[in-house]
Image (cartoon, rainbow, N blue to C red; front, side, top):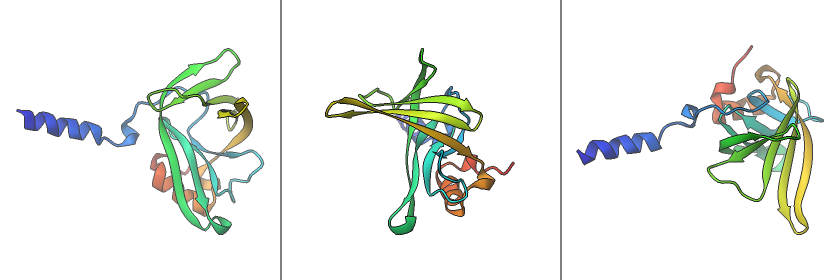
Length: 154
């Protein structure tokens, strides 16, 4: 009897990330890049796939190595009074934070708070969402590898 319980537990632990429950954010899933960059040439950005958030990037001379990604499951979200939504990455909250606020269907503000020597350092970045068809060939490879559900041509 213990054997099937252990097997069931192993299967549950190894469930793919895509099976995670979607979270509620005021932004659409996709690849989000710095608002001053162009989708056709971007080599780094952020992925939101409905359940995870994180950086996706190429590195090295002329972004010649990679892709790499640092994606974390969003543990929960909380709407704040200032119009931002807090994303708790992982099961517990730390000193830093990630807040998002929709500005338009394909435009948002990412507010990042990171601990520093003088307290929490706050940075606001305007990000734009890239459609899969508008992405650079490199980012298409990264999306297919790290968030294949976003590799949709519309």
